[in-house]
Length: 105
Image (tube, rainbow, N blue to C red; front, side):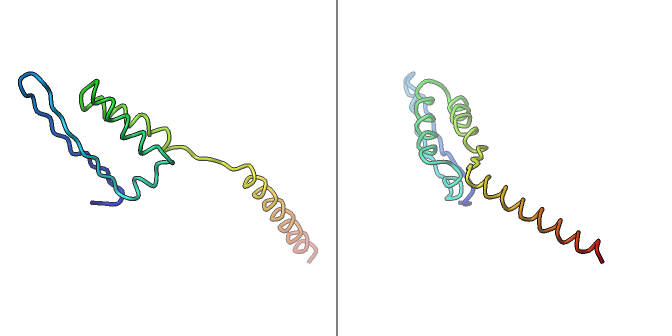
């Protein structure tokens, strides 16, 4: 299986009016790594709980909606922003000095 893939094997059988279903979820290493801590467990738990109440389509939709916002999340650290600001100031001053020297010549 591809490291970026996620496969859900699902079977459903109607036995005397009782719906029996089973599933197994396989995820590649990169798929699990792109989810934050505990989000993969939430995905599996949400899928399980949704399957108990609804059909496969809704369980997949609920699970996907749960992790979708987490997949697109980008965290900006304030300390990194301050460091980037200092570096940019350094470059501006360096380039200003360099261009001032070029103009003098």
